[in-house]
Image (cartoon, rainbow, N blue to C red):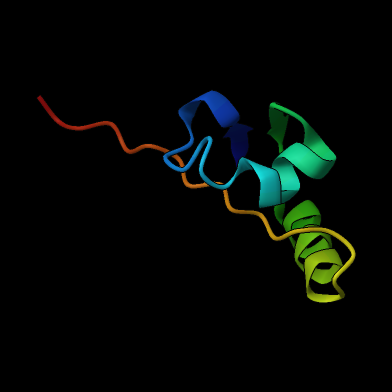
Length: 60
């Protein structure tokens, strides 16, 4: 998964409580192992959960 904050549906609304802005930054490639690690840290209360919701391109 590529996280691009500029393309997030909830940018601005959820940025302050999102693991992407807390840990990763504005853009990153995140694989399954990294997602599991982020989920484990969030479940332990160490970081906020990942709230990334990529925009889906609408068909023309």
